Length: 424
Ligand code: LRH
Ligand code: MN
Ligand code: MN
Image (cartoon, rainbow, N blue to C red; front, side):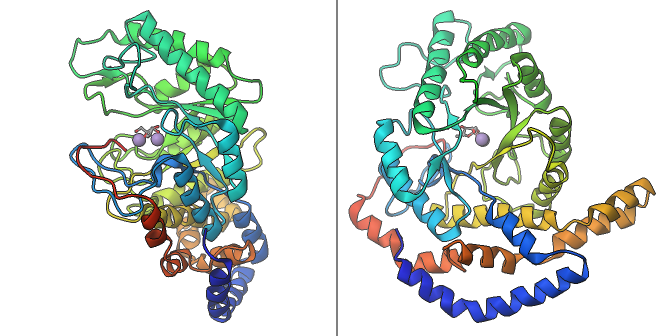
């Protein structure tokens, strides 16, 4: 972890300028009828889960170029997640991927407890074969033509639930790569029926207070058709499964130019929005840092979420899902978590009465300007003040760099080879 004395020293140096910026922003928001302290409290209470797989350097199917001090196993990963939370105070939970993160639950709980972390949704993995596995997922998992392969995938998901129960998790996210690469390779309907039959067996194993998130993705690794390819199929699946099944929206899993914020609004309207995998993309499932390409889109998603706040039973899960190839993953994840918080804070500033009136009066210009006014407000002083008051750092990346954490762990964690490709 980072030395708290360093955090305090850096914060003390930053505080006079930050206080002036915060007060000035407070005055300006006050003129708009907004209480800055209330926004700060909402930001402070907001958290986004770190994906355990995000703290290692990612890779593409062409190559992986590891950084120094790569985490060796889940306990190193949790250490890195602990640093992210310590400095940002925006990431109190970690989302695990099984079997990548398999370890004795008591050890995982003990480590997380030491770091002040808890566990968010569990993720199953039936898109890769594991050593010693009886049946291959080359031609699918939960939708495979072979019943024994489907059964193996069902049992893996049930095992993920069992591990999650021991860890205090309350949700399972299922993403499958099942699909086809050639027209005619699979029968669309029979393949979906097999998937539904298998996923119903997983659903039947859910504890009463758990949720099942099904995650859609348009393509990749299947390049002609994918079983759970879009939000429409995902919605129909969740509907058929039952009330504990909800749809997970990964921002990178849509066709180019798709109106994601409108999908979010639709899923909210029908009570089926389960949560998010935040990231950003330019072309496909690029897994780039959240808000790095299109921060306005992220804001528009949060505009829908804030609009729906207070709807009974509306508690979407917020998780990051990114792959870091050219940055220090800890830095990327810290900045991304803060981008998510920023989008939330900006969305809280939307003057909803003015927006509604403009919508009802068909005043398109005034409506869109109302959103832009909120989006353009620099909320950084609110985020920084919430961080400092929560025990985090005014400038997490600067403090992290000064701490020498990466060099320190590089001394303990052996260098790894980048030979071969990587998927995440
Ligand atoms: C699939 C996905 C899914 C997986 C993760 C590693 O592209 O978004 O969430 O679990 O990547
Ligand atoms: Mn995802
Ligand atoms: Mn993805």
